[in-house]
Length: 229
Ligand code: MN3
Image 1 (cartoon, rainbow, N blue to C red):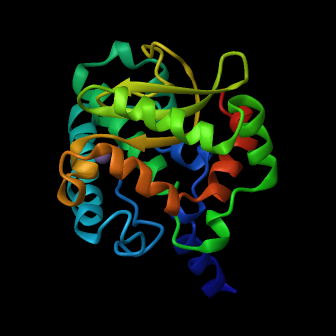
Image 2: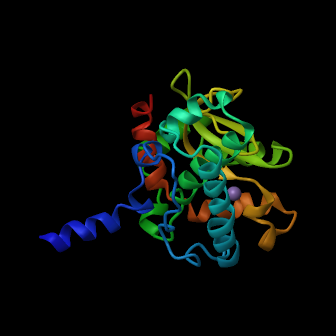
Protein backbone atom coordinates (compact mmCIF):
# COMPACT_ATOMS: atom_id res chain seq x y z
CA UNK A 1 0.00 0.00 0.00
CA UNK A 2 2.76 2.39 1.01
CA UNK A 3 4.72 1.52 -2.15
CA UNK A 4 1.66 2.44 -4.18
CA UNK A 5 1.52 5.95 -2.75
CA UNK A 6 5.21 6.53 -3.41
CA UNK A 7 4.82 5.30 -7.00
CA UNK A 8 1.85 7.62 -7.54
CA UNK A 9 3.95 10.57 -6.40
CA UNK A 10 6.55 9.77 -9.05
CA UNK A 11 3.98 9.30 -11.78
CA UNK A 12 2.33 12.66 -11.07
CA UNK A 13 5.00 14.52 -13.04
CA UNK A 14 4.62 16.33 -16.36
CA UNK A 15 3.09 13.25 -17.97
CA UNK A 16 -0.05 13.92 -15.94
CA UNK A 17 0.21 17.68 -16.19
CA UNK A 18 -3.00 19.66 -16.21
CA UNK A 19 -3.78 23.35 -16.06
CA UNK A 20 -4.18 22.88 -12.32
CA UNK A 21 -0.79 21.26 -11.75
CA UNK A 22 0.99 23.91 -13.84
CA UNK A 23 -0.94 26.85 -12.38
CA UNK A 24 -0.83 25.91 -8.72
CA UNK A 25 2.97 25.73 -8.55
CA UNK A 26 4.64 28.29 -6.31
CA UNK A 27 8.13 29.71 -5.85
CA UNK A 28 10.56 27.99 -5.60
CA UNK A 29 9.73 26.51 -9.02
CA UNK A 30 11.36 23.24 -10.03
CA UNK A 31 12.32 21.53 -13.29
CA UNK A 32 10.17 18.42 -13.86
CA UNK A 33 11.47 15.56 -16.00
CA UNK A 34 10.27 15.46 -19.61
CA UNK A 35 7.21 13.23 -20.10
CA UNK A 36 9.22 11.17 -22.68
CA UNK A 37 12.88 10.28 -23.32
CA UNK A 38 14.80 13.20 -24.89
CA UNK A 39 15.25 11.26 -28.18
CA UNK A 40 11.59 10.18 -28.38
CA UNK A 41 10.51 12.91 -30.79
CA UNK A 42 13.31 12.31 -33.33
CA UNK A 43 13.51 13.17 -36.17
CA UNK A 44 11.02 16.07 -35.75
CA UNK A 45 12.80 17.35 -32.64
CA UNK A 46 16.34 16.03 -32.19
CA UNK A 47 17.73 14.78 -28.91
CA UNK A 48 20.42 17.42 -28.51
CA UNK A 49 17.96 20.27 -29.01
CA UNK A 50 15.60 18.65 -26.54
CA UNK A 51 18.27 18.23 -23.87
CA UNK A 52 19.64 21.77 -24.18
CA UNK A 53 16.17 23.28 -24.45
CA UNK A 54 14.84 21.50 -21.38
CA UNK A 55 17.96 21.15 -19.24
CA UNK A 56 19.47 24.59 -19.87
CA UNK A 57 16.92 27.04 -21.33
CA UNK A 58 13.94 25.97 -19.24
CA UNK A 59 16.18 25.55 -16.19
CA UNK A 60 17.49 29.11 -16.65
CA UNK A 61 13.94 30.53 -16.49
CA UNK A 62 13.33 28.62 -13.27
CA UNK A 63 16.58 29.84 -11.70
CA UNK A 64 15.83 33.44 -12.68
CA UNK A 65 12.27 33.27 -11.28
CA UNK A 66 13.45 31.79 -7.98
CA UNK A 67 16.16 34.42 -7.69
CA UNK A 68 13.86 37.31 -8.67
CA UNK A 69 10.99 36.77 -6.22
CA UNK A 70 12.13 34.53 -3.34
CA UNK A 71 9.33 34.10 -0.80
CA UNK A 72 6.60 35.10 -3.31
CA UNK A 73 3.27 33.69 -2.13
CA UNK A 74 1.22 33.88 -5.35
CA UNK A 75 1.01 30.82 -7.57
CA UNK A 76 2.15 30.75 -11.20
CA UNK A 77 -1.24 31.69 -12.68
CA UNK A 78 -1.75 34.54 -10.20
CA UNK A 79 1.69 35.91 -11.08
CA UNK A 80 0.93 35.79 -14.82
CA UNK A 81 -2.44 37.48 -14.25
CA UNK A 82 -0.73 40.41 -12.50
CA UNK A 83 2.63 40.29 -14.23
CA UNK A 84 2.83 44.06 -14.89
CA UNK A 85 3.28 44.59 -11.15
CA UNK A 86 6.60 42.74 -11.22
CA UNK A 87 10.03 43.52 -12.69
CA UNK A 88 10.59 42.47 -16.34
CA UNK A 89 12.67 39.49 -15.16
CA UNK A 90 9.51 37.96 -13.66
CA UNK A 91 7.52 38.38 -16.88
CA UNK A 92 10.31 36.64 -18.78
CA UNK A 93 11.08 33.90 -16.27
CA UNK A 94 7.67 32.90 -14.90
CA UNK A 95 6.30 33.31 -18.44
CA UNK A 96 9.13 31.12 -19.73
CA UNK A 97 8.46 28.52 -17.05
CA UNK A 98 4.73 28.38 -17.82
CA UNK A 99 5.30 28.25 -21.58
CA UNK A 100 7.84 25.42 -21.42
CA UNK A 101 5.98 23.41 -18.75
CA UNK A 102 2.96 23.49 -21.08
CA UNK A 103 5.00 22.94 -24.26
CA UNK A 104 6.66 19.65 -23.17
CA UNK A 105 3.24 18.11 -22.57
CA UNK A 106 2.03 18.86 -26.11
CA UNK A 107 4.10 16.13 -27.76
CA UNK A 108 4.22 12.37 -27.72
CA UNK A 109 5.89 9.53 -29.61
CA UNK A 110 2.81 7.36 -29.01
CA UNK A 111 0.73 6.85 -32.17
CA UNK A 112 -2.47 6.78 -30.10
CA UNK A 113 -1.74 10.23 -28.68
CA UNK A 114 -0.94 11.54 -32.17
CA UNK A 115 -4.44 10.77 -33.44
CA UNK A 116 -6.70 13.82 -33.20
CA UNK A 117 -9.80 12.95 -31.16
CA UNK A 118 -13.02 13.44 -33.22
CA UNK A 119 -14.34 16.04 -30.77
CA UNK A 120 -11.30 18.28 -31.29
CA UNK A 121 -11.30 17.69 -35.04
CA UNK A 122 -14.91 18.84 -35.14
CA UNK A 123 -14.12 21.99 -33.15
CA UNK A 124 -11.10 22.86 -35.30
CA UNK A 125 -12.95 22.17 -38.55
CA UNK A 126 -15.88 24.32 -37.42
CA UNK A 127 -13.55 27.24 -36.70
CA UNK A 128 -10.93 26.97 -39.44
CA UNK A 129 -12.68 25.07 -42.25
CA UNK A 130 -10.40 22.03 -42.01
CA UNK A 131 -7.51 20.69 -39.96
CA UNK A 132 -5.15 21.44 -42.87
CA UNK A 133 -6.37 25.03 -42.98
CA UNK A 134 -5.81 25.33 -39.25
CA UNK A 135 -2.25 24.00 -39.60
CA UNK A 136 -1.51 26.39 -42.47
CA UNK A 137 -2.85 29.38 -40.51
CA UNK A 138 -0.94 28.33 -37.42
CA UNK A 139 2.32 28.00 -39.37
CA UNK A 140 1.68 31.44 -40.87
CA UNK A 141 1.28 32.88 -37.40
CA UNK A 142 4.53 31.24 -36.26
CA UNK A 143 6.33 32.58 -39.31
CA UNK A 144 4.84 36.04 -38.79
CA UNK A 145 6.19 36.32 -35.26
CA UNK A 146 9.34 38.36 -35.98
CA UNK A 147 12.23 37.36 -33.73
CA UNK A 148 11.58 35.30 -30.61
CA UNK A 149 8.19 34.26 -29.35
CA UNK A 150 5.35 31.80 -29.42
CA UNK A 151 2.39 30.91 -31.65
CA UNK A 152 -0.77 29.82 -29.83
CA UNK A 153 -4.12 28.18 -30.30
CA UNK A 154 -6.33 29.67 -27.61
CA UNK A 155 -9.90 29.85 -26.42
CA UNK A 156 -10.41 33.59 -26.70
CA UNK A 157 -12.62 35.98 -24.73
CA UNK A 158 -15.61 34.90 -26.86
CA UNK A 159 -14.93 31.24 -26.09
CA UNK A 160 -13.93 30.50 -29.69
CA UNK A 161 -10.76 28.83 -30.90
CA UNK A 162 -8.34 31.44 -32.20
CA UNK A 163 -4.72 31.62 -33.37
CA UNK A 164 -2.46 34.28 -31.92
CA UNK A 165 1.22 34.95 -31.28
CA UNK A 166 3.17 36.60 -28.46
CA UNK A 167 6.70 38.06 -28.27
CA UNK A 168 9.50 36.73 -26.03
CA UNK A 169 8.09 34.63 -23.15
CA UNK A 170 4.74 36.38 -22.98
CA UNK A 171 1.60 34.29 -23.23
CA UNK A 172 -2.13 34.90 -23.64
CA UNK A 173 -2.81 34.35 -19.92
CA UNK A 174 -0.89 37.51 -19.04
CA UNK A 175 -2.96 40.61 -18.41
CA UNK A 176 -0.51 42.48 -20.67
CA UNK A 177 -1.18 40.22 -23.69
CA UNK A 178 -2.66 41.98 -26.72
CA UNK A 179 -4.96 39.02 -27.36
CA UNK A 180 -5.96 37.24 -24.17
CA UNK A 181 -7.26 33.71 -23.80
CA UNK A 182 -6.57 30.22 -22.52
CA UNK A 183 -3.83 28.41 -24.51
CA UNK A 184 -4.80 24.91 -25.63
CA UNK A 185 -1.76 24.46 -27.89
CA UNK A 186 1.44 26.43 -28.41
CA UNK A 187 4.66 26.38 -30.40
CA UNK A 188 7.99 27.76 -29.28
CA UNK A 189 9.42 29.69 -32.25
CA UNK A 190 12.59 30.88 -30.53
CA UNK A 191 15.67 29.88 -32.52
CA UNK A 192 16.83 27.75 -29.56
CA UNK A 193 13.84 25.48 -30.21
CA UNK A 194 14.99 24.48 -33.70
CA UNK A 195 18.30 26.02 -34.79
CA UNK A 196 20.62 23.01 -34.25
CA UNK A 197 18.60 20.90 -36.67
CA UNK A 198 16.76 23.37 -38.89
CA UNK A 199 19.12 26.37 -38.77
CA UNK A 200 17.20 29.35 -40.20
CA UNK A 201 14.39 27.20 -41.64
CA UNK A 202 11.66 27.88 -39.12
CA UNK A 203 8.99 26.88 -41.64
CA UNK A 204 10.45 23.35 -41.91
CA UNK A 205 10.47 23.01 -38.13
CA UNK A 206 6.85 24.15 -37.86
CA UNK A 207 5.80 21.63 -40.53
CA UNK A 208 7.78 18.75 -39.03
CA UNK A 209 6.45 18.95 -35.48
CA UNK A 210 2.84 18.22 -36.45
CA UNK A 211 3.91 14.55 -36.68
CA UNK A 212 4.60 14.38 -32.94
CA UNK A 213 1.80 16.53 -31.51
CA UNK A 214 -0.04 14.87 -28.65
CA UNK A 215 -3.57 15.68 -29.86
CA UNK A 216 -5.04 13.67 -27.03
CA UNK A 217 -3.44 16.10 -24.60
CA UNK A 218 -4.48 19.15 -26.64
CA UNK A 219 -8.04 17.80 -26.59
CA UNK A 220 -7.78 17.38 -22.81
CA UNK A 221 -6.69 21.00 -22.42
CA UNK A 222 -9.46 22.17 -24.72
CA UNK A 223 -12.09 20.22 -22.81
CA UNK A 224 -10.99 21.85 -19.54
CA UNK A 225 -10.17 25.41 -20.62
CA UNK A 226 -13.14 26.80 -18.70
CA UNK A 227 -11.56 25.61 -15.46
CA UNK A 228 -8.94 28.35 -15.82
CA UNK A 229 -10.30 31.48 -14.15
MN1 MN3 B 1 12.13 27.66 -25.56
